[in-house]
Length: 451
Ligand code: EPU
Image (tube, rainbow, N blue to C red; front, side, top):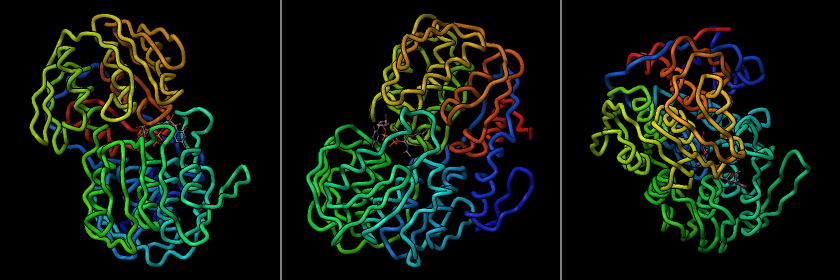
């Protein structure tokens, strides 16, 4: 892999060093902030990067095979680096050139996920299914690193699923030890709630289990269907991915080949909302508008004109944005990951909008920052706010609580009068690649500064 350059110009030799440098020094996340001047009008074209939430699945999926997998369109974001570091720490060989990475996991020589890395990001849970499928055993800390869900974001659904597959589970309050007697066995499992990562985890585990597994009440995100298509092309037998029911016949072996990560639909939607909120015209390229159909249907109803092809989306200028009530929902419903940017957009609409966040308990808390900027927002309860637009927003000093609220605050700052400072931007770097450089090309005025 190429050297990793970090904030203060130190250079690290590999992913594990890089991540240790960033994460062990807790203060790192506070070392940089964005200074944003507004209001701005944007114009031009922006390319969407590969989907973070698919990269975080295909990297651990490489454990399912002992052969070399080549992953293309890998986004250069912090969560992906953590995932690569975790894999490298297990003993995998990784070499990266730009957005292409080659991974060979034949040399994995331990069954314990490095707790220093794993407990820093929720998606470390994605390693559990492939590790159990290949080695029949895995030890890991409770995955952490996220503020949006209550109770430390539970993993009970995963645990129920693994128990159904015959896994013995030992837990000491801090970490887990999962072990199978004679490998994973097929099951008929109904998810008690729709979970993206739990669906992907059981799908990957079942791919190498003995017998045919049936999964019901599955998540239907496009990243899941695309991962299944890849695994099938390499020897797996997965039917129904992208629908509520899946049937997975376990196979003896999965080969590895080339995988191209699909465009990030959350990034696509965030850029579309950014253009609408700032009254700008931009063209978003290398995207799949079909994956944000619900947002585009809403755009039609709230007076935001757009034009689309299979892989581009042009948002046109608009003035009179209508209010709209949304309720977040699993795919293909309104994504929770676009709720925060959409809430900002509604501060510029003419009238009252009810925003109902159904997936995460803490994802509306960021609206306090919007109120500080001058938005008229009433919190009804932790899951619902009413936004009374339009409001003129003013620059303030703010903190990014999580990734999606972070991009929402950037959008708010771009519509606001004056200077906004956003700190804790490590949260934004977790999921958006070189965001300030890419937005500045469109006419934004964003500076990254060391604190
Ligand atoms: N839940 C449980 N128990 C579980 C699993 C989930 O109670 O064992 C609850 C969660 O606390 C949450 C709900 O179920 O309230 C849904 O969570 P889900 O498991 O679907 O979320 P996830 O799979 O952990 C993925 C994305 C999230 C995205 C959600 C919903 C990845 C790595 N993460 O999370 O992305 O918001 O699906 O679409 O794929 C982000 O990118 O900012 C992000 C948070």
